[in-house]
Length: 79
Image 1 (cartoon, rainbow, N blue to C red):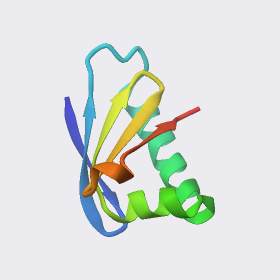
Image 2: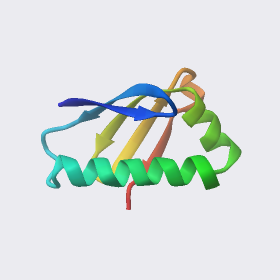
Image 3: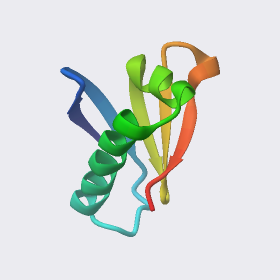
């Protein structure tokens, strides 16, 4: 499943697997809160990834953040 979120004035696709046991609304709320927290208080490497974010993949309780550079791709825990 695919959804679009608005993050830093651009639309970013978020991909889900159908295996997620939690509701999509709860996951999206956790994801939004985590991203906003990390953009304000995260380290330089994380901010670099968020600045060039092209897509997000949700796997269980983790969000895989894909950026323009493969070296900047990160995994974030949503909990």
